[in-house]
Image (cartoon, rainbow, N blue to C red; front, side, top):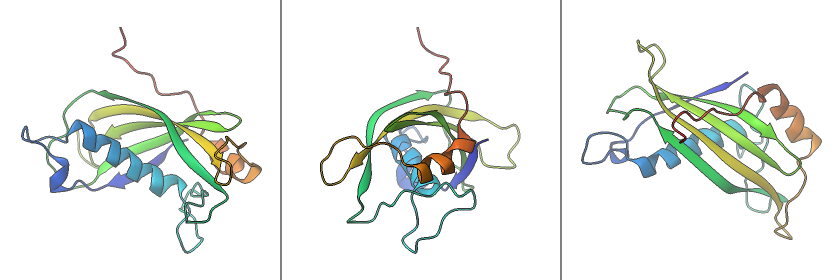
Length: 157
């Protein structure tokens, strides 16, 4: 199963070539990841129940990015409707997980265009020691329904 997160594009996301700048893609993926996995400050969760990470100051466990890979398949042109980012967990390890993404044209736009594929490896770390910390039962239970095959990159040589 996959999560769908709609992310609006900002005018500043675009470069002189009138498409989303490659560096801004990392920000768009970050925004989708935060919406999908970070618990809101009011303590609630998102519809899917995957927003279970406490990212507030003073949290006992933090998440760090260990690796990111992006494959750009087509330039994203300016559009006013939010892009549709599908997220899932490609691997759920002991202290790390791989978040996978496919970035599509807005919901309802036909034909549906796949613009980007990406993967982010996140390591859970003790805020006190800075050392990797096992993914707890609550996080594992929230994310388990979203585990499927990792993203398949097509342009590897």
